[in-house]
Length: 342
Image 1 (tube, rainbow, N blue to C red):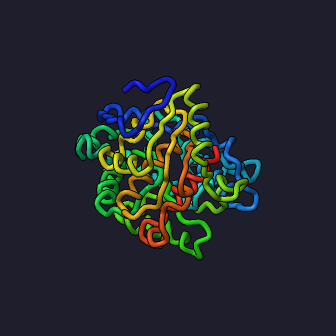
Image 2 (tube, helix red, strand yellow):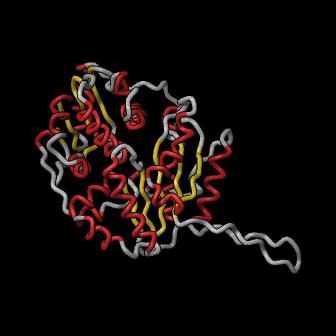
Image 3 (cartoon, rainbow, N blue to C red):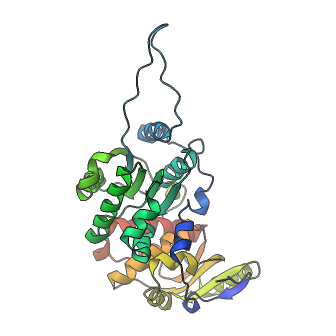
C-alpha cells in the first residue's frame, strides 16, 4: 500500500495486508531506537539499578572488557557464566526498550530479530508454529519487547517456541512492564514472568530496573486536548506538509476490530500526524485493548497525535484500570500523553 505523500487520509478507509515475509522483515528495532546504544542510554544517578543493568547487558551482548588481573602473575577472575536469556523487569519509561535495542545493535550476530510479543505471536498465526520455529532456528538473538502474561494460550506458545530456540543456541532478551509506584505491585513482575514461563525460567537472568517514567519527567502527566478550531488548524497545517489521518474516534475504534493487530503498523504507514475527533471513554474492554495495541504502533513510529473530546489519558475507566489489564492501560496512558505533547 502506497501512502499519500500529503493531504488528509482516513484510517477507516484503509484495509492493510501483511505477508509473513513482510512481518519477518519488520522484526527490527522501531524508528526511535534504530541508533540506540549503551553509550546513549542515560542512566539516572538516583537509581543505581539502571547503571548496573546497563553494565550487565553490555557483558551479555559481548562488549565487556576482560576482568582485570589481581596480581602480576595471577589469572584474571572468570566472569560468572551468563544464562542464554535476560529479562528486564521495570516500570514504564525507565529505558527498557532502549536497552533491548542496544543489545540488538551491539551483539555481533549474523541473524538477530527484534519485535514485540504481539508481532511474534502474529507471525505464529500467519506462518504456523512449525514454520515459525524453522524460520528462527539457528538465529543468534531474539529480542522480545512487552512480553505479555495475560493470555495463557499465547504465553504457552511463546514459551514452547523459546524453549526450542534456546536448545538450538539462540540467545534471548525480553522486557515487560510493571506499574510504577504501585505499592510493591511491580516487585513481583519478575516472579510472575518466571512462573508463567516455568519451563524456561532457568534460562533467564532477571534484571530489575527502577526509576521514573522519562516521558513524564518534564510534563504534567496529562494528554493535550484541542478545541475543534485548534484541531482544524493543526490538521490543515500538517496536511500541507505530509500525510495526516483524520478520523472520528469511535469509528476508528470500530475499524480496528476489522484489522488484525499485526497490521496496525501498515495502517499508519506514511503518516506524519494521527488525528482523532470526539474522543470518548471506553465501555468495552476488547475495544480498549485493540486501541492499546494501536497506540503501541503509533508510539513506536513516533507519530504525534492530535485529539478533541475527552483527554486520551482518561479514556480507560477506573474499573478497567483496576482489572487484569492494568499494566497495558497504564503503558498506553504514558504513551498517549507523550504522543499528544510531541
